[in-house]
Length: 81
Image 1 (cartoon, rainbow, N blue to C red):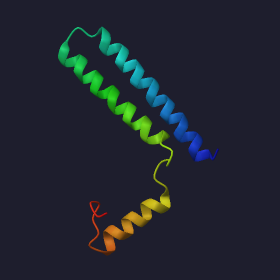
Image 2 (image 1 turned 90 degrees about the horizontal axis):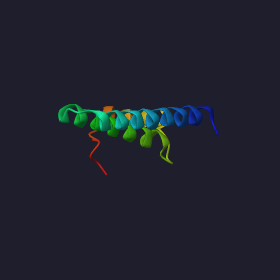
Image 3 (image 1 turned 90 degrees about the vertical axis):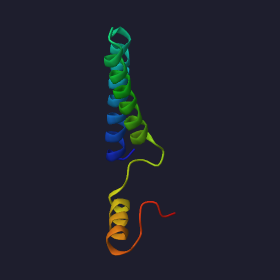
């Protein structure tokens, strides 16, 4: 496993742990608006963990550079397929 992959895997685990903590805290929260906020925050942490641990991995520097080159040098847009 490459070093960058290990760091992404470790961060994904930390984000999942934080999502679990927030979900547990929300279960004990008596106020509905606060409970909803905590659950939304937990979902955001979980989505971030999923993105980090995706099989395709995080965006590479090369891919990010290519995207920026296309954005800056043509009429290409993110919606282009």
